[in-house]
Image (cartoon, rainbow, N blue to C red; front, side, top):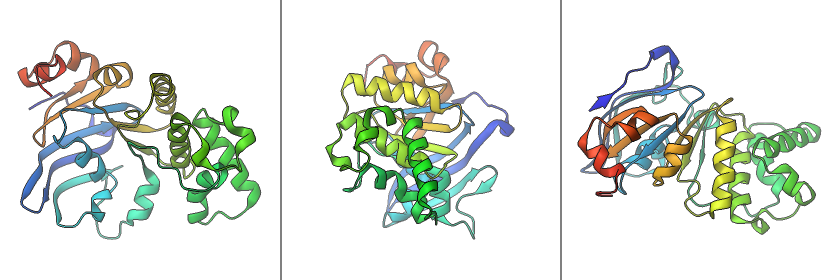
Length: 259
């Protein structure tokens, strides 16, 4: 495996010798990665190669899957996320997640964004109003829907719903945002808006995105990791991965010979 090592001090998340099994299936095999702060890191590779499995391990979403066994170290700011005393709920506050299909709750736009802060104990209406407005503005959505805050979120377009889900994630002030193919269900204009948004958000957040879209990875990612059969084959600066891949399998995938 070819990895360009970065300074450990720059890593927001450090993954060392991570292995994951679903029952007997060895889904992630001795994966090692340093995810840098305030960068966009893209995971690419064919379907079933372990990208989403890896992503969901970073905020312990795998806790919900029966029969999963995990070995190795995943640390956030130097703390083992699987360590004793780590509260998965607080971990997911720090490491938010946006899924492939927009999944707003069947409630108003306002209540979608206020949901997380309320769960974490914020009840003051003025404070909630401020959080909702700030989060929607950060998700480049406020100006489009400021007159519809108390209407159902299900009435928004697909692209607006996905930006609402990003706003909902931002409302609890995470440090890391994980996105699992967030634009695969969207039209090109909505996709472009999400990409522009992510480019802005990386100034404040560390972003990790799973994408099947090679052009998307090359457009927005600072770092790219290529997955194949549960292994990270190659990882480094996106421009280098796409222009001068060191592994023949990476080159074959990027040029469309398989996948």
